[in-house]
Length: 397
Ligand SMILES: *Cc1c(COP(=O)(O)O)cnc(C)c1O
Image (cartoon, rainbow, N blue to C red; front, top):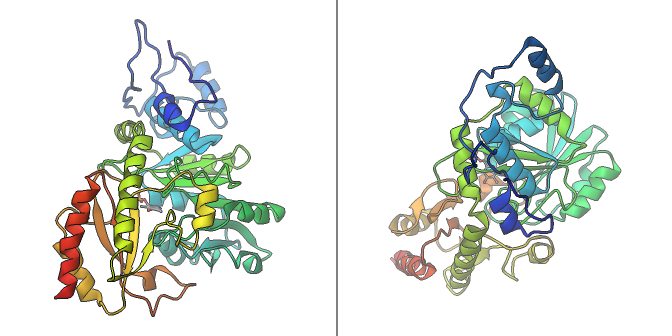
């Protein structure tokens, strides 16, 4: 028997119960099975025809590229997490972003993108939007200049909140109101919030994108992106994704699903460790600024406190400008517990040098110090701080 949790159950409860396995004769496994398939067999030509007619609107198992029961279970879990009508899965987070732009924009349209977007999303402007005559203007990461940048051909506002690298906050409900008053769509990259800490659809967005590669999967061993939408916004995404043959492997969907079961528990630990490291960084004279929206000193803290349920393991800091890039690199290279690498959201701690001058075009970072991004993993924060203490000692040399 598949039991359904009561609708009022809290998120950690729903994460455990969403996307159940089908019932088999005799009983059912706890986890949805991996269903590998290209061909799907039908009982008759009439059934095949009926399925083909209905699969545009309904989610039916009709062909490998149209999804399979493993992927459907993960889609359901993400829809639950995001408070969405439905969800589509993509091979990477970046593919999810690209398919969102491709689904809702056409030549001649204009899109407003936040200055704080994940850098490869910014690169899509030169590599895809501009050559296809879709114009893009970047707006200030706090959203303050959005209204004046809206044009008659604007179709979409694309936000990332909190922003990549330094976690700028914008007022998403206000952007939603502004967008909907003019018939525009509001899309948000929700990778930071992962549905647990931030829920763009509940705040008025039409489309929420996540790199499931990060916290959802949580183990640095699988790539995936998700796009969740409201019912009114669903059709263009579904049609375009089918037209482009977008699908993911059921093995990968299984891995993301397995990670997502413990998302709430892991995030609580990442948040606790992240805050401990953030407070320690604030005590260091070598540090000019600590970036984490849960800190009262963060410029977006009030919006974070209003709209987010918590934070995560991402903490960035700016060194005093007396320290050059070579000093920052010395510090990074000396760390033993923080791996040097891109991405984040796994169980392990990471460190990377952030190039803010390259990552922003609206805000000016030319006079600022070196920015280092940490991802605080599930290690004991006391050990991580010990490691940072010896790392900071290299700054003195
Ligand atoms: C990592 C990331 C992505 C892209 O995810 P991939 O799966 O690596 O393509 C998108 N948005 C944000 C905010 C990210 O941090």
